[in-house]
Length: 116
Length: 423
Image (cartoon, rainbow over all chains, first blue to last red; front, side, top):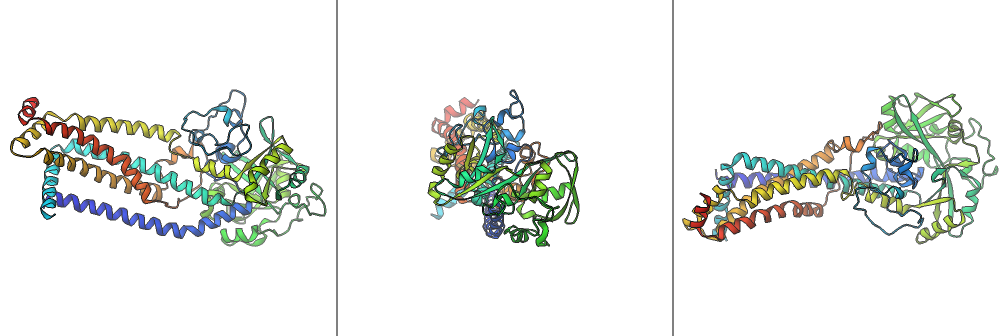
């Protein structure tokens, strides 16, 4: 068998598998709609504000409710030390401004302490 | 067209034979390439799915949350603040919230304790007792009158609607798993005065809602106040709904002017927080990945740009036996394209399996951090063709360019010179 035939067949199989996975993604997303709706209802009824992603510290458990001085939460020289603190960018809001700041993503990998 | 296709297939055959001749090197390249695509695609799928899910789920989050801040820290809010916020023009309603954290020293996990809003007497302004005057008597609350009962019923299997009577709690699936508790069991909490407060598990939230409820413990107001020793005229914070959604920012501004020791958090901010969480431009994942990508770029560039002496000689011979420059370039194109396409599709498939079948097992230790209680959630696969196209242009195109340019340079020189240089 020609090498190109073997390659094209295996490539077609890869494309086929990917197609099946994308099809599955579409059907699962539709099926999951009910679960997401239930979760959204639960959020609305209980007045929840955050996802339960990191339970290690209060400011990572409730990212949106963290106070602005979180980086020094334990004592004045205590910098953020929880691993998940490295995963999340600083909040989009600017310190001192209570009205939502313009949408902005920080490319900085070091979190300026004053903004937490 | 048939002749052209046949020619391309012949060139592809030749390119594949050429790849097979340097089997070990090319297999290494293919494995590395697949790994890079796998990592990039995993991050892309994971972050996109999580952000999408967060935005859908948190649509129902409070419009404005008002916290009281004392010395830079979140503090309890006196109930008279509720009336002051209600008097602000544009405010439709104000609900008090009672919530907090409980550290379980036995298993080392943190729980979020919450009183369902609308069930606490202090939440109702039309309450005949008025805020802060309602006696917290055991058995007073009875079956919940809020929609919580029916809602929880839809999320919790076999729940009786009286689950939230004083002395009972509804717990998240993560708490149940960690504590080995089920409906009917008792959990003991150490209250602020040192006494033990046993609470019966009335129901367990469905594991389907674990992304929002994994560490939750929902309890009644009397139990909450007794556990934490919070006076009746204090609440944790308040949520505000606004008559006109376009006035949310303005109302938030008014609240912060009227009550300078408070901090309003608007829903848009919450959604933006989650929109940027795991943004793949920030965070350590990207640092790790960028190092890997850089290593791959150097490897690919070195392999592609510095054609080996044997490859140069091969090109020289091909030209000497009558191959045209265009044909040499096409052959080199197929060499790059076969490796790229095979690695791209394999990497994407592996990434899909990794993120949506194994719940991102490779990332889990990083994401888990020091969390003892970590939700077991399956992400909804939100994968779009745009994502795949972006990934394709990020991975396949740069490699194709890196391969083509040196091949073109080698193919345009004189065959005699190419063969002599190679010696």
